[in-house]
Length: 86
Image (cartoon, rainbow, N blue to C red; front, side, top):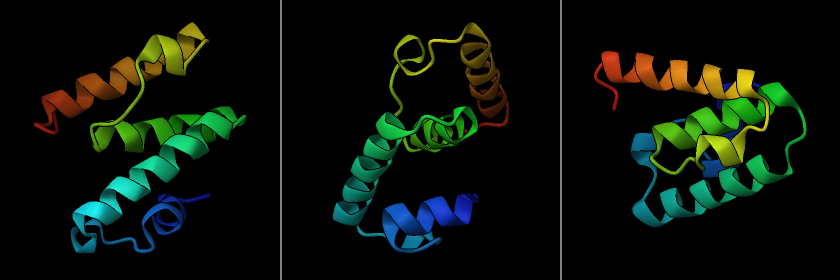
């Protein structure tokens, strides 16, 4: 699954700038449900990353039972903050 697939599934488009506020809210809700149901580690990380970017990610200790996954998420958070994406 690519990021375009995830965006299209959640928001009906790959262009987030074209999504209305209510569409954004509904898409975040879909992403949250997909995250909760995902069992594949990589898919969970991708969904969490997108939720984080949108300001709706669950806390790391809740999202990732594996310490390595929490460390990877912290690294992403640090990279985004350093790039001015926070």
